[in-house]
Length: 319
Image 1 (cartoon, rainbow, N blue to C red):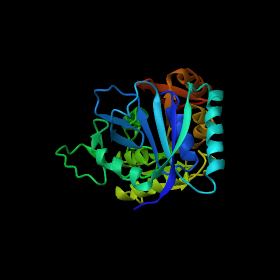
Image 2: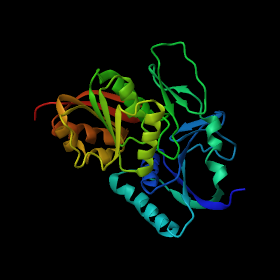
Image 3: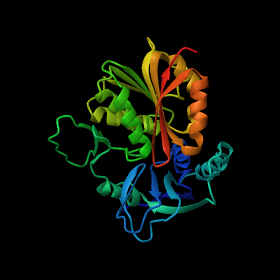
């Protein structure tokens, strides 16, 4: 029998704010983040960051999103909750609409959240080329062109179900060439790093500021037998990184205001005519991201969108 030693932090907010809130929770060391989408009552399953889950009548919402995160109930909890609340309040400074959001806390047992959701996370084909398979499921395909990614998201951010991940994968499929050197910034559970490697990149450098995400990327890299092909490191975006030579591709599936902090560093690290893939951009931020990319020396090769999320494929050109 498990003792009750975890706090479930429940935040109800808008669809627009859900990823920003989830990112804050991960940055503060959440031991698991679940996003429950607004969903129609006749839909059986929910699909979102960190989880595919079966909904009950009590769980579904027809408006907004509910984000749940799990933290150890220890002496640091009170100050951590205060810091998280402050960071969420500050999102309005970035023109992210929080709506009339609420924060509540419940005590839970570890067994209630750690493993139960796994039985609803099934293999799924996220693009024509990529299928993501949880480690606890078996999967056989007769399609020799299909690329499979083994995934155990654990406590990290992302199982690949979100539109921004799908768009990022589609962008990688379009531009990765054999022997490219790729940098994945904000790697989360490592899906994009693994995908780039499976697309025959020569080497992938995978960075995340969150220690949990770094460990998850390492675990998933090794599950896919790509230990020597992907270098994983804890790092703040592209600050102070050095490569033997300029890289071919930088991909960042994060948030728009964070992307703005790394545009110049991406330009510096890329080869002439190298590609910068940026994702995680909500509709009202798309024009700003496009303008900044152009101002900093990138041309926009393609703008991709799904479910009001935007992904840009930008190419480094001479300033």
